[in-house]
Length: 74
Image 1: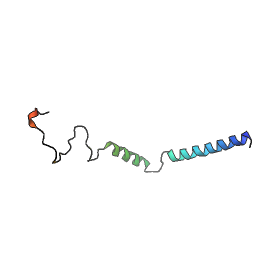
Image 2: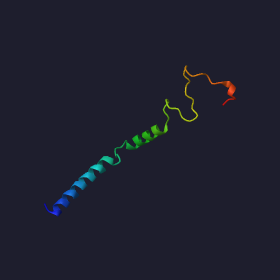
Image 3: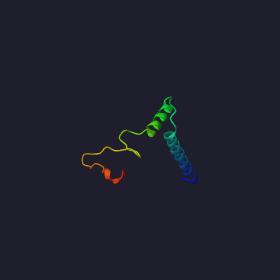
Image 4: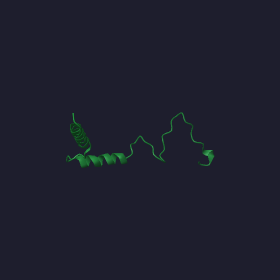
């Protein structure tokens, strides 16, 4: 096989691979895609009820001792 044939095979394989990657990672264009994007962002911003953030109190279990009120409120 000549060098030109090898080069042609490499170019074809590269173009096919690039087309596959582009098709898999392009932005969706159906009519609900913008609504889906917005819903996904709102879900990411919202806190689920089971998570505790900074300053949030987690429920005390029966195993844990009650906080000592003699420590000056710390």
